[in-house]
Length: 491
Image 1: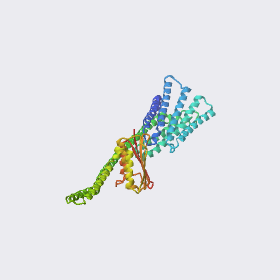
Image 2: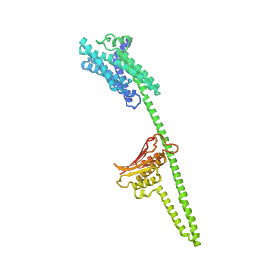
Image 3: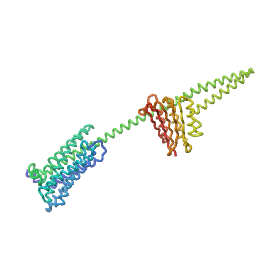
Image 4: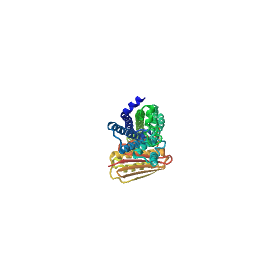
């Protein structure tokens, strides 16, 4: 064992280099992973852990250069070097404590309290340094040695234990997400932190602080044959390796999020395709229904009158052939039938595409349609108000606004059971706004369209509005009526 001890003491510079390199590597690995977007609380506490690795690794390399200079030319560290060494050691342990406190149960809800916990522990260390100074009145070098030992006792050991406990708690989060293999790496990392904190920091340089007079680095090398820095370096390497394994959970999490996003995208595409298919079917059904309505009206009204007109003409022809006196009366009746047929044809054509919309514009067309709508539905009181528009709108805009208003009024007649309807057209701030409100039964605006086609009218309104860069909003509650508003931008 003496040979082993002598070997390590001759090569103590390499031990410190390995020790510092292990912590620097840990800090580098953790820092690279700290920028990932993750749902793990663990991910949001990684930056202080990375800072601990960098600062602590730098502290060990700083001591390595001091030892190297002492071996080469007998250089003795002065007060400034001791201050830098103690300061970097304390800073690294405060970073480790910050990492641990950020993973406490209430840390995210009370971040200020977590910071004050670190400050409180730092004040305990300062109080210990003040007690040593007040009791022993040591030289500055001895005081700094005592501060180094107190930092390891009051900051390093609690920080390592807190980090180990936090990592053990995070294992449950990993298990809950189906990442038990990565959680096992956290278990080994927690064990490595325990070894580093309890065993590695218990054996310090000799100082005025109890029990460092006996339990120190010299005692460790006599008992185990290796310097305690080697144990710390091995623990640091174990922390770097096990944390690196645990941090691969973020890659697995990213793959899971990507898989969920792809699944959601595929489901959204399928839903959009189903919606499109439903709309196509609804459109075809609407077209067929409109054709049936037009055919029925032509057959029931215009067709019958034209048939009667043909029969009347035959009767006139017979009457004229016989010089019957009733021929004049037949001609007058046939003229009335022809006028009625022409009126009905004009009404059908107006329903298909009102000439007022092309010839006079949106406001007259809406006023004409509202008047006809009120005449057809005497049970409804319909109020129409319109601001004077700045000018004619583009044809497509006028068509969209008219058709949305027409669809909304038809929905009121079919579904609302209302007694009052208000139609309001206005223009302001470069937008034209058409609002149709009723006092009917209303409906729940959430949910998907009904299988019977109900609800697809609203979808069609929104699709029409989108063609001109507009939007349709629907406000309704059961028993509270419905309000449909379309807004389209105009230049």
